[in-house]
Structure formats: structure tokens, C-alpha cells
Image (spheres, each protein chain N blue to C red):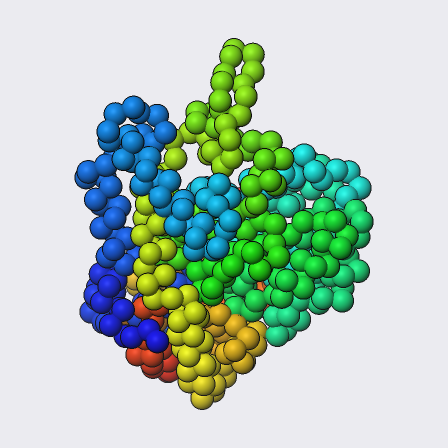
Length: 407
Length: 121
């Protein structure tokens, strides 16, 4: 169980907004950071900062050890076989782009296809559109129903011998639904296609074990799992990473450079050109420590309790539309909704005045909102380890007040 | 700021937008969308003798978008083209009676942007 005390670990939650208690309900956009993460980054900058993998002196060796230690923590967190399977990136978006550019250019050709779902975040749509234009492959889109379930029958038909990749979210950032990755991976692998999972949400909210997941690539976001922004990771098996050409060129990703050519460093460093975000990686390592102490199973249970509570409370209000499943067991800690007669932007502004931060808009998933739900924008509340029932109560009271104002 | 953003005047223009609809023979018109949230506004004008003889707007959006477009139509009706072309975002703030803040500027100024586009400004 996660106790309400956890909230005290997050200094920002002590802020008052417009003179009100702060109820932060936008953790799907980004999570707040516990003091241990803030301290780890601060300590690194105060005591250990040096360029990693370069210096022979003590400080650089210490910095390298901390940076590589963070890689090990991330690897263990998702049960990777080794830390060599973790490539640090800027964010989950860059991890997906790395696959699209480095692996995609080498493996997807004219006449091939890549399959994604309509439920994807823009970060798992746009790179495949861009590469599709360059490589002339076909981008196939699998439907999702109003309950947020992927049409597996259609998916099975869409995956052919020319399918090179199925790229799908591990957890929808709008509906919170979690596609059956193991099933999808079986379908894809039968036809020789690889599977990429956009784990920006799922890794932050449910236990992840890449040995059982069935995926070939997993994109991870640091700032959505209590870590800092500017750090993410790509997981893939070492043998797969080794077959891939580099993504960005520059320092640290090379073994030897002449004026004519270069040879590449070993994986994962082959994919980490330039001075990396060491302080970000160390913050992410501290976030992993924090989550592991809580236990990801507990994190998931905590959020499901909150979702069940919030759904029950929201449904007592008149004129509320909830998008996605109404069964808390079928989703992660996020609820997209609309209030009749109150535009989501007005709702978000009015809630802000009550100290409640929610998201309003298309949540970087325009195709899902437009094609499946026929709306341009929704409100969205989302949870993390520090969210309490009191936050939800404050939000529901603010929704009622907003409706009175706009009524 | 409290709920002061949603002043009486804004709520009134949101619920009862003025000049909402279409003109039969507009001399100028334009349509703009706020791609962030899907709000959209169409502005139609009838310009005669360098004056705004008639104006109408239609569209859908949040209270701020609709109220500011509605207030704008009231403000430009009967005015000279030269005066209307001088209107800026500060004038919208004045009409709304409040500065909306960076997160809602796109909503507040969508009507004005559409009007400017209609007049080829």
C-alpha cells in the first residue's frame, strides 16, 4: 500500500496555487520529483560533475561510474539482461526516433509496411509518417474501439510478410488502456516483424519485465516516472542493437576517426553521440530507486484504487462524459472526460483557480480523439504515487463550482 | 485572479453571442482554427464606403474564444476600416476587461486574427 505520507516527499506539492491547496492531477504529462531525485542531481553537480567516459582524473571516473550506475538501475528496473541493452536518450520520443531512423533506414524498404494503432501518442505516429515518406513504406493504422481496445482481428490481417514493425503504446496516455503486448508480439513475430512498445506511460505506472513483454524495443521516458526532463531510454536486446547502424554522429559514439571515416563504439555507447545528460541519468537512477522502494506493483494498485474512486465520484455528476473503459481494472491512472456545456479549456482555467491542475486539449493524440471519439479536446486527470483521494475530492468540487460559474 | 476571468460580460457574450450567424453577401470573410484545441471562428464583413456596414461571426470554442469574438463584432460595427485595421491585442484585453494570460491568449485573440485575415491585414 502507498500511504498518503508519500506526498511529503514531493516539495512542489507544498505550493499553494491561487491561495489554495495544490492538487496536481497532470502526472501523465509529467510527474513531480521526489526530494531524493532533486538531491541526487544536486549532489552530482556539487561534487562529481565532469565529462563522462573522457577524463583520466578522479572526478571523471566518479562521474562515469555514477552515469553507468544509473544505466544499471534502469536495466534492473525493467529486468533487462544487461545494462548494455539500455541506450540513454533525451526522452521516449527520441528513443522512438532512434529506432525509426537507425533501424528503420536499414530494415524497412519500399513495399514493406509498418503498423501502428490509432491510439498512439504523436511521438509514435509522426516518426513513422516521416520515415514512410523517405523510405516509401506503407503505414497501416489499426482501429481502436470506444473502450480503448485495439482491434486484434484487424491487426492480425494487417500484419503480413512485408510487415517490418508493429509500434504500439504500452498504455494509452488518454484512456489508460494497456494493449495485450504479448499477444501482439506473437502475431508480429510469426510474420517476422519486430515490435516496438512506447512505454512512456506503462513503465511509469505498472511493473515492466522486458523478458516477458515480448517486445523488441521499449521506449522509456524519465520525466514521466519521477525523474527529470531531458532523459529517456531505449531498451533493445544487445544483439539487435549491434545490428543497427548509429543514429547521431559525434563524440563518444566512435572508436576511431580519420578524416575520411570512423568506426563505431560498442553498444549502447554507439548510440550516445556527444556529451550525454549525465545529471539527468543520475536523476533517473534516483527515481528508479524511489519507485523500487515503493514497489511498482503497489504503484499500480494505488493508481487503480484512485481511478475506481475518481470514476465513482465523476459519475455522480450530471453531464459528464468519460472516454475509455469505466472499469478501473482495465486502465492505468488516467481519466479523460468532458463536462457538458463547459469547454475543457474553460474547465482547466476554472479548476486552476481552485488549485487543481488538469490537462485540457488533445493530449498529443489527435487521431484518437478525432477518429474514435469525434471530439477535438477533452479534460484529463491523471495520477501518480503522490496523488491522494483528497486531490480527487478537490477536483470534483472544483468541477461542480466551474459548472455553476458557466451554467 | 479568482473567477474574475469569467466576468459577467464574458459569460454573457459566451451564452448570447452577438452577431452570431452569417451574412448574405459579405465583401470580406475568413476562417481560422486554433489547432491546439479545435476552436474555430469564421468572420464575415460587409464593407461599404470604407466602413463596416455589417458583421457576423460563427464557429465553436471555449467561452473566451466565443466571448472575445462576440465583443469584437460589437466593437467594429459601424467603424471606419482605418480604425478597425488599427485594432490590436491590447484592444481585446480592454474589451474583455481582463488580460487572459499566456495559456489563453490564443483563444482570446482568435476572433481578432480572423478579422485581420478577412481584411487582408
